[in-house]
Length: 314
Image (cartoon, rainbow, N blue to C red; front, top):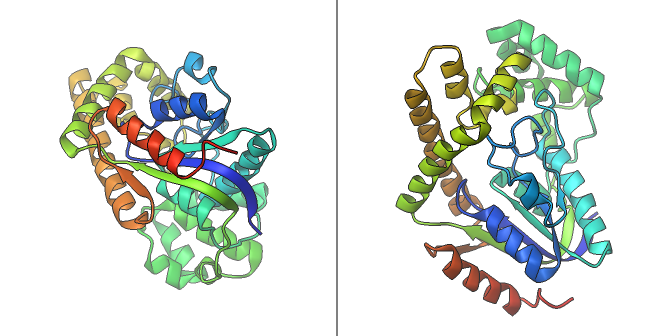
């Protein structure tokens, strides 16, 4: 059953497109609170590497679901969406406007369209399955093929995260994940929403990606990479896929010069932004895209759009 949130603003867009700055401006104008929809900004160990706002910036308005997860504990899109819907309801109950912002398209889909209603998996079972998958190595895909052949056919043998998910669902529910995925989903939230996608031009976005990653290295990204390396986490964990993390760890291990690590991190960021652009263009066609190149111009368009929707009035 959907929870009626009332008014809300949802802001998606590729990395380095200016989403966080826009969210701050909207929070000031609308009396809002900000909810994270970026799968990497969940992790408390990587504020700089995941391009989170500074502590001072986050203190300007209430921020939710930032830095709430340890890097060793992945959070699925479905579990994130349930928590986000609960928080949005609480924000609305305070008479304020939820502003959900991030670059993880699957999170927005789970929140607004719903996902298969799979029962919760116990932490003990999840831990046991992931340990089994890690121990099996390349043979883990065969375990999934035995448990859920249809799912295995759609998953790369190297994708241990999804392999473990498929196995744990079968063991917990007695039903294959590929079958659960056929159950019609139910949206978690309802209300009057402004659904916004920021889509700056490709050349501008690439330049912003490069400049931001270089700046991050000077603002503490290396120290965060060293701390992540010290945790000795499973390389298949989602947190280990943070943009630029592996090149910086390679530099710290003496395998890359700092200039090479920065160039590799910048390339990863540009490639990820391109994939995000493709997702938003093809999977979020009902959202309103804004293409202006400078933040002042696009923000004026967005404020007018939100006002026209009546979201500035409760």
